[in-house]
Length: 191
Length: 305
Image (tube, rainbow over all chains, first blue to last red; front, side):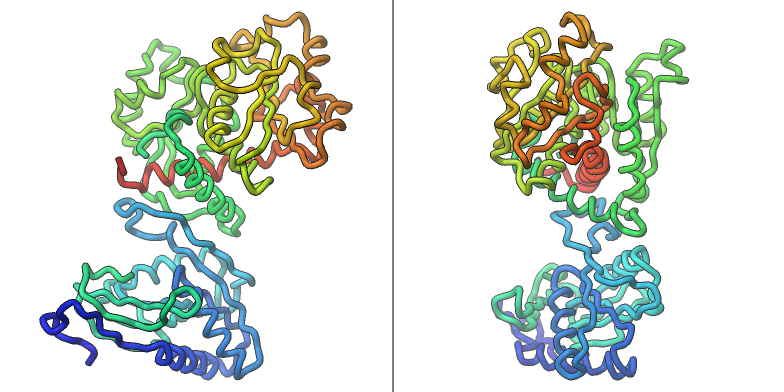
């Protein structure tokens, strides 16, 4: 439905979510997480670098606003777990910081875009090296399809059908100037 | 970056990059499972032609923490005692499929030869009295983690500088990073052509005690002839040993470092070595992290040149 034929784009970059849309999606995901688990007991949000981290913090903020409970938020860098390290040079690694023992907890991984699933595969390995959670779930702002691995999200901000040569850009309040989601033509890699 | 042979290959940005990565790997080494799959499927050859405990174990630990496999060659119990040349040994090891070689040899330049013969990336783990770049990097990482910066630090390197690859690598990289270096040694243990190092020198440790941030002590390298150029150990200690009395004269926030192995009672008093100023054990643990950074960079980066 947001798929605009490339010939019509003429270099324009269509915005598919505004900053307000993002806020609403974050609030809905926050409610869904609490609803599914009948509360916040044992939930740890873990954001994947870089834009999963502020998203996880905003979900935690939303949960706090209606449950009055601070859910622990961790951050995870998957740079050392990627399966294409040999072919893609790495820049600085992000910080990995998990504030609580994950053993027995419900970890909700948070990322901006779900695409091939390879980032989540890496994140699962990284989380399982950090502890033994009871359960791992996945929350993403945009699911753009084209999975290469059997991975599915538990909470989705927006399903965004795309072609493989398009790019999905998610910009988040706090680290980017203007928040929102855009689709543009490109080499298929998300930025 | 394809090889790490000398600190001269590293400009300030390259050093900062390796120290940043080193910080990341310090965090990895502190995890419950201090191991990541970054170099899974890679094999690292360790060629050690000189006795070594910490450097070889440190590279071994670094490689394994990145999930790489290790092929270790040490001179004891090898075909070297049957007359095999360095070149034949290097080519034999290469035939076993490593992706990178770590080389220590008593002869200056040996790691460059191994690189040319094998066409593999090579890390110099110490060649004669010439270079030991990963030691310099681990010292810089230790200093940066302690002081928050390296720029502007006043460092006195004390001891057998003439025979020390550690001093050569460290002095050069400290200057690259903007620290000021003073070499403290009897004139017979200063390097030949010391004027080309562009550093200050001092003929006794007492001259620098009041105005240093770092005292970096070196052992007398008797195996390279360092023990034959001063009259007695007692006289050396009287002018260059970091005794307890001298350690008390150091500025309050200064630190003491030593690359090991230490000769307690000669260049360093045993209580100073175990005291609160000493960063010796930090140097060892940071050495693993910085070697992880070097191996990771060399084995995952495209050749950027």
